[in-house]
Length: 554
Ligand code: PEP
Ligand code: MG
Image (cartoon, rainbow, N blue to C red; front, side, top):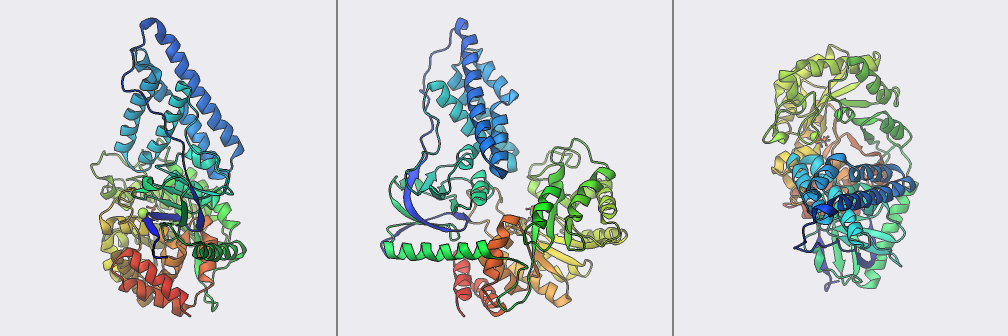
C-alpha cells in the first residue's frame, strides 16, 4: 500500500513475517567518573570481577547445555571467551591499579576488540561476542538485569543494533518470528543462528532505531525489506503465500530437477567428514566444495600426508562413486594458516593466498595432492585450485593433478578468469564460480564489511555478467561450470544461474531444500528469461525484481 514506509537491509534468511516490533534490553551504561579503588579494597574488587565473570560464563554454559547444533557450539565458545585468561589478566591488571571492575572490564575489552578488528576477517566478527560478554559482566557487577532479548508475550519481530550469540542462540522461534539488526553482515552469528532456526532475518539496516517498540512490521527476509503501515489484507496474503512456500520446502525431496524434469546437479559445501556425513543424509547429490583449509585453522605445523589422507578419505568416502570436489588449501586473508601464511601483509585479501602460496612453498600443494590421490584410491576425484588468476597457474595445477589421476578444475574468483574463461577452460576439466570472492574483487568491496553489504551482493550487474560469460564459455567447450559461492544458495538467483547455463549449484546443506523446491517450480525457459531479465538490469534490486517477475510468468 502506498502509505507504507520502507527500510532496506541485507536479507540473510528468507521468509515473511508480520508482527509488532520489540527491542533488546539496553546495554549497561557506565558513569563517566568513578572513584579510584583504594589499595586496601583492590583484592576484593578483583574477587568481585572474577565472581561476575564466572556467573556469566556459567549462565552461557548452562544455555549451551540446552541448545543444539551451531547454537550450542557458539554458546560454548562464548562461555570459554568469558573465562579467557588473557582477558581476565588485562582486567585484573587495571583493577590492581585502582580502576573499578566495571570500568576495567570496559577498558580492557576495548583493547581486545581493537586487536580483533585489526586482524579483520573472522576475528573481527568475534568482536561482537566479546562486547556482549563485557556488557553481561558489567551488568552483573552493577547489579542490573542481564542485557539482551526480552521474553515477548506474543509473536514478535526482534530489533537490535547487533545481536550477540548468547541472545540469538536462546531464541524461541514461535515467539521471535523475525530478526532485524542495524549492524552485522551475512556471515555474522546472528545470520548463522537465524538460518539454523529458520527465522526470517535481515542485517545491516540503516536507520533502524527510528522504529519504536510495538509498531507493526512486515519483514521480507528474501528481499531485505521492512515495511510499516502495510494494510492487514495485503500482509495476510503475503504471509500465507510464504507459508505455502515453506510447506513446499518442508516436503521437497531430491534429486533436484526443473518443472519439466531437467536435472540440476545440487551439491553440498562441507568442511570435514562430519559435514560430509550430514550432506550424505541430505538431498545433496555430492559435494561441490570441500573447503580443506578449514580443517587446519588451528594447526601449528603442516599436517603430514598421512594425516591429510585420513581427513580427505572421510569426506570422499561419504559419497562413493559420486561427485566430490576437493578444493586445495585456500589459506590466507580471512582464513590464515600458521604453516602456510608466513608474512604479515598490508592487504591479505589481495596477497599471497590460495594457489599463490605454491610459488614459494610448492611442497604444501604437492603434499596435499598426494594425500588427495591416496584418499581417492584410484577414483578420479575432482580437485580445484582457489584464487587462480593466470592461465599459467591453471595449466601447471592441471598438470600436477593429471599426474596423480585426479580431475583438474579451477575456481573463478578473480575477474581476470571470468573475462578469459575459454582460455582457462582449455587447460582444465571444469570450473566452479566462487561468487563470494568474485563479487568482492569485482566490486572492490570487502566481503566481510557490513557497511558495504549493498555492494557485495552477487546481484550486482557486473557480477552477473561475469558469471554469464563464464557459463557461456563452459557451454561452448562442453565443460561443466558450477557455482559454489553463496549465490547458489539463493533460490531465485539459483534459477538465474541455471538460466545462464551453470551446470551445478553447491551450497550449505541447510539451503538445499529451499533451492530444490524453487527449481521444481520453474521451466528451463523461465530460467533463461529470468537470466536475460536480470542481465538487462542496471542495479541489484532491479535485477532481483526482474528475475522474480520473469519466474512468476508462465
Ligand atoms: C567463494 O569465494 O565464493 C568461495 C566459495 O570460496 P570462499 O567462500 O571459501 O572464499
Ligand atoms: Mg573464495
